[in-house]
Length: 169
Image 1 (cartoon, rainbow, N blue to C red):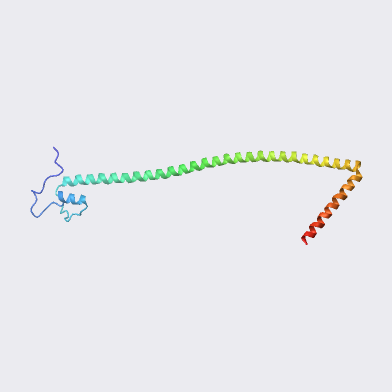
Image 2: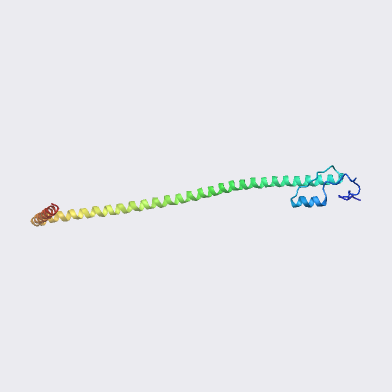
């Protein structure tokens, strides 16, 4: 049969030897008070071994937790880097796709503008040719009326300039 972990040694101790840790001092330690006595030595080797085993187990557990937290932290940083790379790649891909669309639309717009410019240029050229034809016809069919119209326009323009000049003075 196994020995109990804690034996009551108060009866077996001499009056000068008192246990270092009592129920009172444990309560004080848990409440935040520091014990006033120090341990004079080991009274129960089995209790000491059990306490060492518990301390070792707790120390190992804390070490594993720290190691685990370190692994979790490292994994978190790795995931952040991977996510950043993935997001960067996706953003680059989307930007390239958008750039291709913009380039295609700009090319279409340039082509449409060029076609419209050619249409407007052709219409302007045709209009100038039509005005030249009409001027030649007017010159050939009505030369005196044309000269009179130019003289009248010159007279009106000269009179307007004279009035404008006299107003400024």
